[in-house]
Image 1 (cartoon, rainbow, N blue to C red):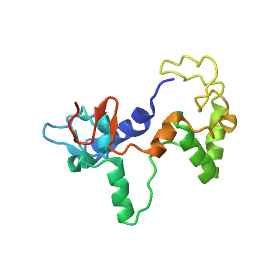
Image 2 (image 1 turned 90 degrees about the vertical axis):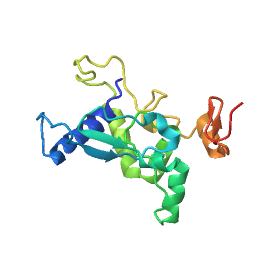
Image 3 (image 1 turned 90 degrees about the horizontal axis):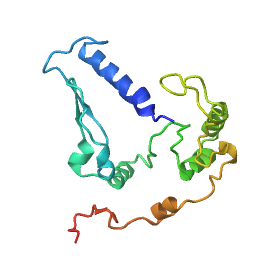
Length: 185
């Protein structure tokens, strides 16, 4: 299926809001030199997501990258300031959740879990707008990658990636690059 959430539910509404804030709603021409600066919280571990806005009236700024902060640096700062833990943001019924996220939802937010299970059941047969051109969904849709109903999916299985994340990576290196600042030979 198309991955359209970011565009439909984040980018388009933000663009509309920026135009409104600048005083140029709708498709009105925005004069050269009029722009908004948008600060985006992308950390060093997701630097690949940092991009120019592609719009003349909006400039992206990445303060966490300017500070050189990783997600762990952000967690440490928030904890030191008394804010506790801050989970990654995602929609309740995001089909890109891993088992750990599904378990956390089931075990820590039963109302949201019920919403996700209900949503999962409702998309089983797809709908008439499965694609932008109105082509119906072929087959069945599921939120969990096992292609089982969410309330029957094997979310208690700890995946290899989850186990690796629990163990941590002390120097921040992977087989493809090193983020520790040390030279790679």
